[in-house]
Image (tube, rainbow, N blue to C red; front, side, top):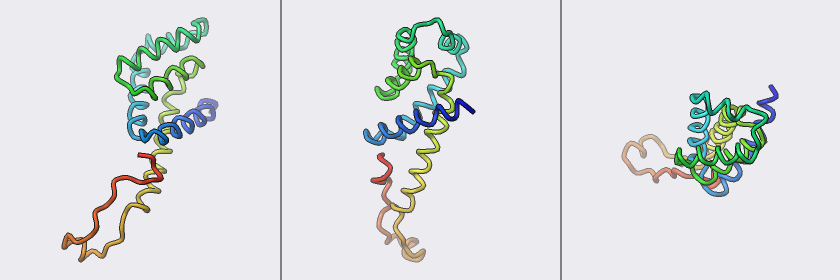
Length: 139
């Protein structure tokens, strides 16, 4: 339960930054990839779990892992922040909450970007094109 509560502010802050930079989808995918990497690599997980490892070292390692994985600057910086604060065990929950925010925004955009068009007009190919972007989504 504590992980879920602690993860929400991280997810919201990252989502706000990604939205500002129009990288919400990219960051969402990368966050999922980062969570999968940490889940699959026991040695890496154990390293970040060691309380005696200095935060600066954890940040450096997180940055290196992110860069080797080809993650964007925003996701790399986020990984370093979370590692430095000793919250790498929260990444999976943060990714889940981030994905929810992304889905909520996408659902809201579906109503905005889908023009109303009668089915007979649509089948005749005379409907205006649908917008793949939504000003509210930040994508």
